Image (cartoon, rainbow, N blue to C red; front, side):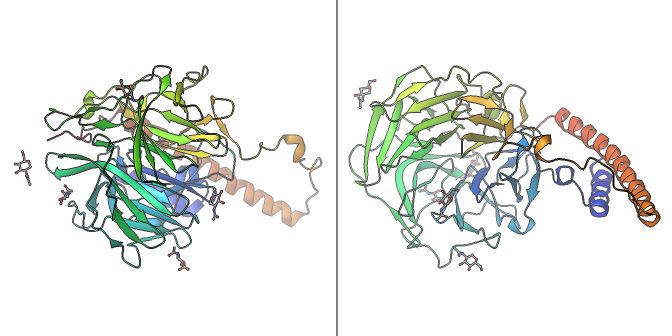
Length: 440
Ligand SMILES: *[C@@H]1O[C@H](CO)[C@@H](O)[C@H](O)[C@H]1NC(C)=O
Ligand SMILES: *[C@@H]1O[C@H](CO)[C@@H](O)[C@H](O)[C@H]1NC(C)=O
Ligand SMILES: *[C@@H]1O[C@H](CO)[C@@H](O)[C@H](O)[C@H]1NC(C)=O
Ligand SMILES: *[C@@H]1O[C@H](CO)[C@@H](O)[C@H](O)[C@H]1NC(C)=O
Ligand SMILES: CC(=O)N[C@H]1CO[C@H](CO)[C@@H](O)[C@@H]1O
């Protein structure tokens, strides 16, 4: 069914080149990355719903209003990725010009084999192209890591804490770490910090946010509490790890407040007034099928209090998205934007035609995105009288009318097929692939 459909879609799009909503439909995915540059929410990487990987790079235009379930994604074909990767981290440079992509399960797109020979790729926003860093990165040799989250400080240093390192690519078995690797994006050098006191437990799949004070707040994830422990366990979500980037020192804090389930595969955003909003995620299990949802889906950590305090906003379950994991979250003005991921309620990937929007000021889920309120009918007055037409422009109008009528008819047929295909997609059972690491 796919091939004739794609051919039809291709001809349709080429001939009529209208409506990029219908013409660009990215793959559903989880464990991808998202970065906002210049009013564009860029999406790339991840595992798609067909258990393949994706090289696509595409974006949502945030300079326009939209409904959360009627999206216009735009593809950037020249921004196609140099490598397949998932559970990687992507960090934007201070000048908003470059994305630094590091780690994940990296697969060579030509050989389809795992390939950790180059761990960092950079995306030049002005040319829309990926490359390896130039000049080549110097300093310490840093290993491949998965399930990490990098943050950048205000001097251009990216901090990457611990994470997972797969040692057997057949079984996905590997180790967790608690080291701190830093990438200086100004001098293009890696350094593995040597820190002695108060090291946290080995850990991965946490969230990370850097406060204006230079303290990085690490929440949740999975850990291995002792060398002899049989497997990984969830990090207690009240046990907050703090890394002081000014002194290179670790400390721990016991957060107070509402009861929040510990979790992996979730997201966080930091608001300008010092609140960390976490969303989604799952329990820990060694196979995807055993992952289950966590409560509440959304919670807020107030970092202005000492110790930090959890709370559950009273309206945060109203119009809430389902339980999802492996999604991303970005903050744009007052809205947290949640993209893609896997829906634990339905056991299907989230639709690619939908994002979820949480307003951090009203603490409510909303359905419309508006950088500015959408113009009301009165503010864009339509001409009140139909202009009189002479005969040649009448002929033109009839021609145009017929053309548009034809296009609408073809569109309807196309939409019908599109809807049918989507339903068929939803019904197709997904193969299970092991993505949550198990300890050795
Ligand atoms: C980068 O983007 C952010 C937000 O989009 C903006 O606040 C900041 O001023 C930009 N930085 C530079 C150097 O353009
Ligand atoms: C991105 O590409 C432009 C045009 O080639 C170049 O001028 C600029 O220096 C590049 N940016 C980085 C960070 O390499
Ligand atoms: C990975 O695990 C498989 C299955 O247990 C084993 O046969 C193989 O030798 C392992 N590979 C390495 C490199 O250890
Ligand atoms: C956090 O709580 C544990 C007991 O659950 C306690 O042993 C530890 O000292 C506390 N840490 C801090 C920094 O208060
Ligand atoms: C530090 C460490 O264990 N590094 C390993 C991470 O994984 C790669 C790929 O499996 C190994 O080559 C490294 O030795």
